[in-house]
Image 1 (tube, chains in turn green, cyan):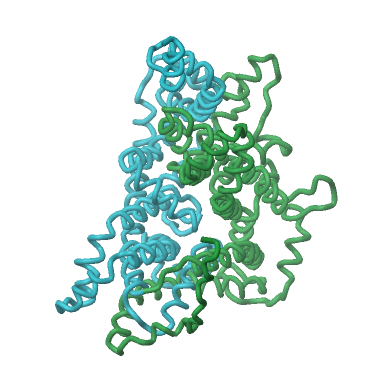
Image 2: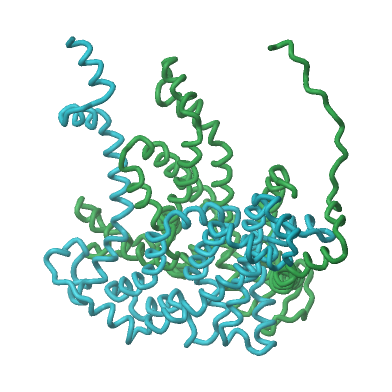
Length: 320
Length: 296
């Protein structure tokens, strides 16, 4: 068996993108006709606006959002001198950028850890689907509803707010979770973790079930403990789904807005703002140029994900 | 004989007591899971209970006193009529249904073009569509709003928000449908063409009927996406009489602040449709969300 000759490599002509030009004129026109409505909408309402916003980022602009008063990179410079956006004058640094960074670290890691733990644990019990439903349901509801739900949980009144009632019951003093700068970001993050963990769990659980049971059984027979099976077999085999979930969570973090708008309006003061929130307030408080600069920053942050999506698609695509 | 019986029980617990022993030996797993599940349920249950409690009770005591207070539907009546949530519910429907059907239709047509027809730069254009999936809506706010304002005040009607949601739903629709259409048997489509069916007939009578699962997954994803959206409604629905429930709730919040009996009832009205969709179409729903994971 080992003496088998290696498969002969036949050089294949490299398939080029222009292949689709083979069609006849009639075929081409029909194809374009089918694609046209969508392409017109995308061109007019996604691509052209993106170009417009990038250009606007170099203007001061006005309430009509026109290209008036060219300022070069001044909008970006202003943003990074704005203490509400970027403040490294003290430790820990603050501002929307660093709040977003907190989101990246805390939100992503909590969702992944909880999702993974739930995927591994639920697979062992008979009421698996019931537990999964309970965790997954928040995925269906809007961030606005999630915000209302957690406003009640965090209510500073220990007679009404669940968390403070527990603290009060244990003899502690009630905390205004959303009313003070050092807790507000983490409080909102936890509410959003509650809403998003279901996604991580479902993806990772499906991937976990795809691992052939023979591999795990064989490891067990060889005397591997549960922790080692998890660490040395499951985790490496889950690396692709984990990266998919991470990317999804990352995009969620870049775009997070609704829950903050409803829970705190970026407050107290400006202490729970994130970049998407700054984009909204700058644009609609008379600084459309600066708002556009923030939108450009958001676009730049999503470009690695764009490249990743295209690469992944190219590597697994099927051609007709 | 006794030994054999013992081995048998170890492998397959038969009696109640054996099952009980097995259950207890795995109890850490059960305890952790049930605790997490309970923790996950509490916030929603708290809001649900609060939505049925009369004002005086909800303002003075916590939801856990549910058994000592009488429950009422009055809060729902109040938010639906006086609070304007009934009207906002209809607005949410007016916004969501076209904003789901438009990308569904245009997306399926474009996906057919990308999967089963040939035209210049087809694959390059498709890669651009894939790239557009993660473009943040923020990059379109200002230009779209300007465009809507200057072209027939589309933002004071529903057209503006329909177009915005259609545009930002399309890349995902095209991506999903194209990847599904391409798995359909080539012979089937060639045979239909041989029989003289027009491209539209092939699309309408062969491809669409075979693609219901993919179409349903996207439709559910997009429906919930639009239904649950606050940000785009804040920006593209300028007429207060046309605002959906998500926007209405933020206004109730500024009026009622700590009056959770009102906020809770409003919140549950907003959640009702997604929850019904979730329980009725759970399979498509999960598929749709998984498929949508390439977007966000």
